[in-house]
Length: 193
Image (tube, rainbow, N blue to C red; front, side):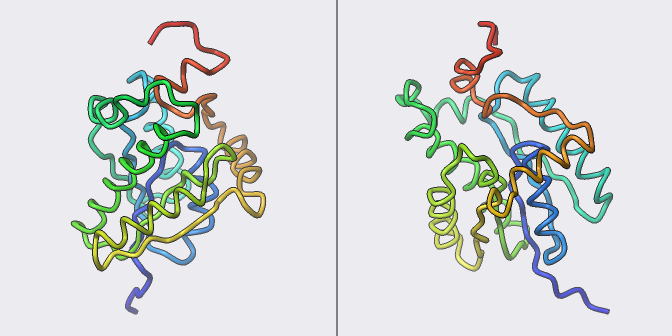
């Protein structure tokens, strides 16, 4: 029997955000998780989020959902957002960060034979799904032949469902978006990176 499901590369920012997205996408797509997040600081936080995302994916989906890690080069993120360091959360710096991660996802998808790409970023109640989907559509045009799958994973209680799944699997849930700038605004920041 031939598998005619579309190949989807899913950009994942952390384990908890992947939960609802994978639950909704896996029945219809051949999903591969792509962990590309050069914005995450410090490196120990990056490793924690990467490992938790991988652990969840392998525990729940086994080899049916491959896990691919992109390159971790924080200098690429810092260069991308240079001049926007003092922007408020949700401002231009975040838009540049979304685009950086989604563009690498689209590039990887195009070069590796995927038909679709998507991101878990729309699960967060703090993220602008309209903006994220607009970036995705622009990138699909740039990478001809690739389709962006628009989403707003927080809808239909998506965020609440991710909390439930995270508790069930005893997942680490971070308290800041990921970058050094959002970390400094978090309640647990102690001044050391």
